Image (cartoon, helix red, strand yellow):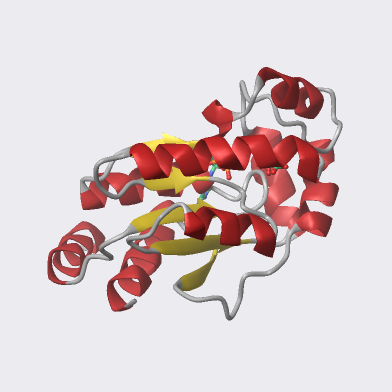
Length: 179
Ligand SMILES: Nc1ncnc2c1ncn2[C@@H]1O[C@H](COP(=O)(O)OP(=O)(O)O)[C@@H](O)[C@H]1O
Ligand SMILES: O=C(O)[C@H](O)[C@@H](O)[C@H](O)[C@H](O)COP(=O)(O)O
């Protein structure tokens, strides 16, 4: 039923530009982003894959990234958006207003943000159960401290992650269709 509703929503009202699925580590950006990309038939870009090796090394060692670490990474994501022939769905933490502004400048056809929001307890639980990922759960606190809430920004929806993946994707697709 959810699948049927998603298909109806997507065929009737599809957000025409690219979409960034944002939020702190463990919020479900990759899981939700892949599903939105599939529903829209857009390519999926995993932001984590565009970090320079030094950033991955730092995070693996439990050291939070700085602005200087993140700008080249955001520039690489921006280049991917600009290079892509059509719209895409990107998983990218995009924690600060200035980062989101930079990304908007790289997508002249318009950019929507789906912000995945969860309590520290839910996020910690998801990070602890995730296997084979470089990001240690110890970095969650600085991730949450760095996050600047995007509520009120243009073409942005916040979705509560304390629900099933189907329900999150359904809510995100509904909101994107109304933008
Ligand atoms: N709605 C959900 N319910 C339960 N587990 C989830 C949900 N969304 C994601 N997960 C799991 O939580 C972990 C973190 O999700 P992931 O997509 O890797 O987040 P991020 O890309 O934001 O770091 C993964 O193990 C994923 O399978
Ligand atoms: O800006 C940052 O500090 C990082 O980009 C971080 O927010 C991001 O979340 C990592 O890439 C970890 O990867 P996951 O989000 O997949 O855990």
